[in-house]
Image (cartoon, rainbow, N blue to C red; front, side):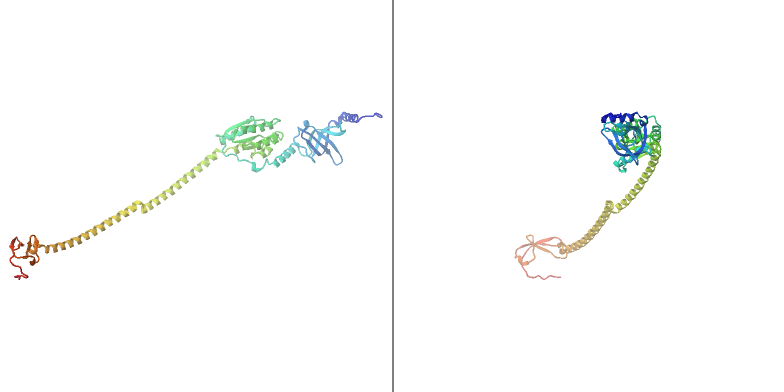
Length: 406
C-alpha cells in the first residue's frame, strides 16, 4: 500500500481487518488487574482497563456476556479474561472484547457470594434486630421448596411426628437452575399475599455450590427479608451457609432441623402440661388449705367478737339487770310493806271506833264533830256516839271544865 493515501476510517478499517483476520487473536486468554471500571447502567455494558506491571489495554464486556457473570467486577481485582482483540474503528482504539471473566485465585461463585454478602450486610438485611420471633405453636407451616425433593418428605415426616395438629402448606418451586431464584422469590411473596402460614420454611436438600446457588441470589435474599411471615432457612447440609440463611429470621442446618424448629414436640408439651397440672393442683390445694385456715381463724374471731357473742353478753347483762330490778323491787316492796304495816298500826290505833272502845265518845251537832263546848248554847240538840250505839240529848248547861271520874 506504499504511496496510497488513506483516510483515517480506511486505516482503522484495515487495521481492524488485520486483527480480525488473525485467528490467534479471536480467542485469547489474558491475565491482569482491573482498573477504571465503569458499569454503564443505561446500556448494561462494562468498560475497564486491564493492566499488569508494565502495560495496559482497554476492554469492554457487553451486556449479553456480563449477564452470565456470578460476580460484579471491581477495581484492583485480578482476573483471567477470555476474549478477542479488535479495533473500535471510530476511535481507532485497540481493545479487548471480553466474552468471559473469572477471578484469578478465588472462584467466581465464592467471590459473588462475598460481594453480595457485603452489599446486603451494609444495607442491614442481616441485622439481628430485624430478626422476628418464630411462633411457638403455629397452626400452619408454609414450605417453599421442590414438591419432589427429599426436603419436603423430611419436613412432613418430622412435623407429623412432633406436632400433627399443624397444617402443612406447600408452595412448589424449582430449587436449582436458571428459573429457581425467581420462582422461590415469587413463592415467598405469594405465601405472604395469601397469609397462608404462620411461619415459612424456605430451602432444599444438599448439593453442590452450583445446585444451591439460587439461594445465594439477591432476589431470594430480598424476598426473605421482605417477608412479613417469619422465615426459617434450610438450605443444604449443616456446613452449607447461603445468603438466604443470613437473611432469614432463623437458620436451620437441614430441612429436618427446620421442621423441628418450626413446631413444638408434642411429647415435651404433654410432659410440660402434666407438670403444670401437678403444680396447679398443688397450688390450688395449698391455697384452699390457706383459705380454710384463714376461715377457721375468722370463725373463732367471729365467735369471740361476733353478733351472737355480743347478743349472749347482752342477754346475760339483761338477765342480771332483771334480777337486780327484781331484787330492788322486792326490797322496796318489803320496805313499803313494813311502813304500810306501821302506818296501818298507827291508823288502827287512831281509829275512832278503837278510841270509842276505850270509853270515849264523839259529840256532833248537825253532823259536825264538836271540839269546843262554847260553840253550843243551852237548848241545842247534840248527838253522842258511843262504842256501842249512841243517844241524843239537849244541852242544858255550858261548862269550862268537867271533872272526870277515873
